[in-house]
Length: 215
Image (cartoon, rainbow, N blue to C red):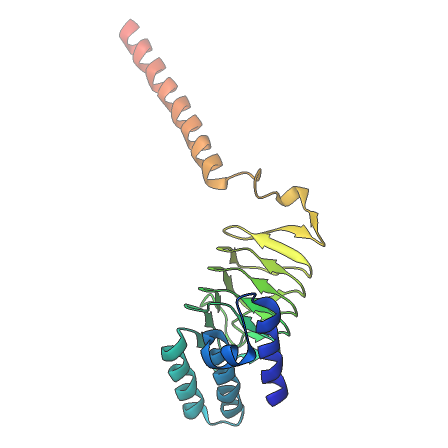
C-alpha cells in the first residue's frame, strides 16, 4: 500500500503544475486524500468488513466532496484533480495512471445487474463534468471530453466528445463518419420532417376548401 500511495503522490506531482511539494499533496490535496481513504476502505470491503468500509468512504466524502464506493477497484497513480462532485460506483474498475477532473461520474444506468459501472484502462483522462455510465470498457490512453455523456465502449487511444458521446479520433486520426461539428442533429431532422408533413396537410386542407367553395 505504501508503494501505491507513493505512486499516487508522484502522479499528482507529475500532472499538476500547481503542486509545489509532496508534503503539500499529502496534507492538502482533496483528491489524494479521497484516494488514500479509498485504499483503506477497499481493504476492509474485500475482507468483508462492509460497515467499516462504508464508514471510511462516507467520512471521506464529507471531508473531500468526492464519493468513491469502497468496492471500486482503483489502480496505482490515480490523479483526481480538484475533485469536488466526483462519484465512482461500486463495480467501477480504474487502471493505472488515470486522471479524473471535477464533477465526473463513473456510474450505472440502473438497467444492469452485477457489473454495473465502467472499466477504465490505463492512462485514461476524463474531463470535468463527464458522465461515463454503464458496464463497458474505456480503452487504454482514451480521452473523454469535458461534459461528454459516454454510454458505450470507447476504443484504446480514442477521443470521445458530445452528448451522447461519439468517438471522433482514434490514434490521433479524426473519424470522418463521426465528425462532431458537421454531424446531423436528429432532433432538427425530425422537426424538419414534421414541418414538411404539416405543410402537405395544410395544402390538402386548402385544396379541399377551394373545391367546396367552387361547388
